[in-house]
Length: 129
Image 1 (cartoon, one colour):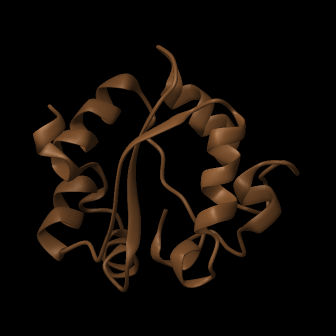
Image 2 (tube, one colour):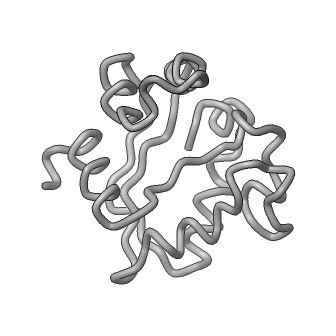
Image 3 (cartoon, rainbow, N blue to C red):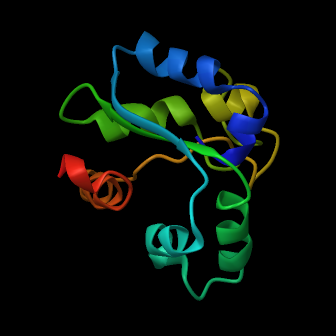
């Protein structure tokens, strides 16, 4: 959960949606992400015109970093719950469709593949690997 979701008090709402889908939170930590960690996390976006604003946004305040389990395709289930990155295009019933207020302020991040999930877990929860 990105800093905008935490700041808006949506932790319970968003975790509730994950749990309603029978997903389990196996690790969670409220933390302000350091710049070096953000740069490692967003390495594939380096060189893009939006990169610096992306790093600034994710490091501006506390995020709730989670590892979620449920099934072999948990990452796909989570992506479906999140909705489209652009909240204006996100379907009603999704986290972003119901709650997000902008493109950058879109509340949540979710891995886009099993490989990305593994890489991101290693970044944020290396003791779980």
